[in-house]
Image (cartoon, rainbow, N blue to C red; front, side, top):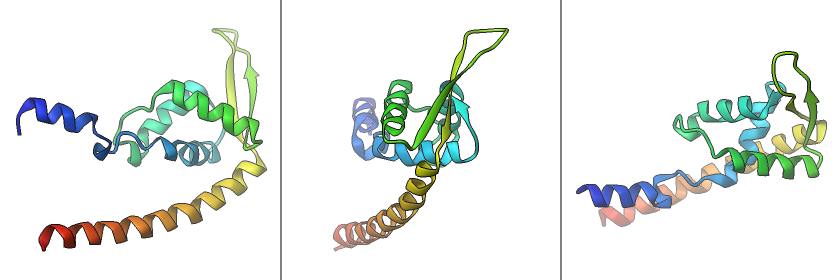
Length: 127
């Protein structure tokens, strides 16, 4: 495979770098471990196995946080510091915890569907 083809594959959705629909449950999972400010949250999201060590786009994280806060799943507050600027801290709400419980069921359903799709794809390529 030449370099030009590799670059094209890196940008293709099949490379798995565009799983932005999973940012919401990932944020809920991280915040279930405890409150974090935005930068720490983005760092922690990058550590999750699903991200392959790549930090998510911070603007996407903040956009998802705003949406989660609007829906009552996340609450934020300003934390003042003597050594630096104030930081917004985010915490999971009881509604967010219930949403995370629903995500577990939804993700298990997705996993089962993906497993079926993988089996069908393997059969199609071997026939």
